[in-house]
Length: 413
Image 1 (tube, one colour):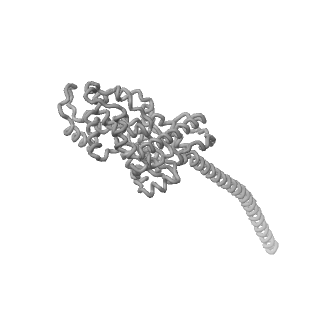
Image 2 (cartoon, rainbow, N blue to C red):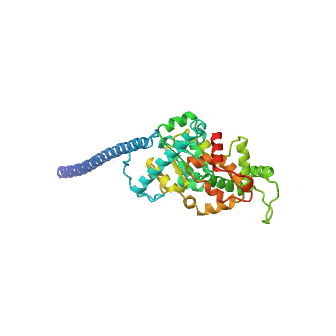
Image 3 (spheres, rainbow, N blue to C red):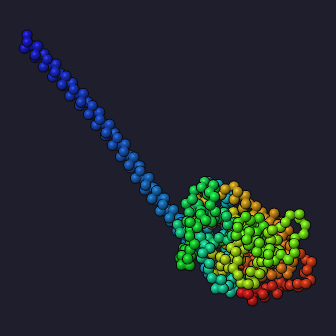
């Protein structure tokens, strides 16, 4: 009986052991199958990733090829030669962007813009040759912004929609858009942290392989804008001091009427100051310095000469030519967009011009024109309208002809 009981217990233990072994076999079999499935899935993912990487590399190569072809096209289009008869007229296709552009762009606008820019460049070169200005005004590299990573060179003409391109360059410099909109730092201060003032060799190296550009504006509109912003209503300590100096030197009599004391200079006093500075050979403030001596377009062969009057169109052309659509298009704050729109319309500007230029007489206008006439000619602006705005009371005392003005400009240059 005892033997039979012991035997039964052994059989029972053996059965339990066999059951445990079977359970373990089934469990490890299940784990092996799951591991195999996971391996197959990972293999599929790896193959898909490899294919994606190959596609990305292909796209990068294609993008690089496209950028190279655009650069090659630009070199052909904007040749340093004055002979434009061999310029290619076939344009690279305009890529339709799904972004919010600063200007409604099309193939026709692209073609018209390219034609206008070529004419502007050719016209400026002709004026430079006419007065032999190529070596008279050497380059001023410290006023340029160079973005080597984007192959862009910009000469910042103050009071010629410079705030917009300063904003663009700050984006190119890596600043976050939200930061730019809320920061109290001046845009110029931020930009110079990322784009330090270059030396002559830096500028020469960059110009050889970059798209270079500047924006210009009617010279007298520009100096009026500088006067109103810095001297008439400015709060900057430096310009307040300058305003007092101008008043002290050029105000002969108290200003009658108005009921309000006028501490800042009148526009006429400001113009007298400019004439005096010019006659003494002193350097001008950047906000009213002539462009021919500030950005020196006769010694630097700019790829593109943009104008405030066609700012949106010209800016988008530059952005697209540089391949910066995804970085810059549609990024402007509403305040800057409205400002540019108002500048382009020009209706209010004409009213202001008539009002302020009525303060000066014809003789003063002639003297002011001596300073800025080259800018009028280089960038094809009309200065004759200003003779309709000036005070005519003392014209008979100062007989001046356009011929005399032209000869005086030649003698200066």
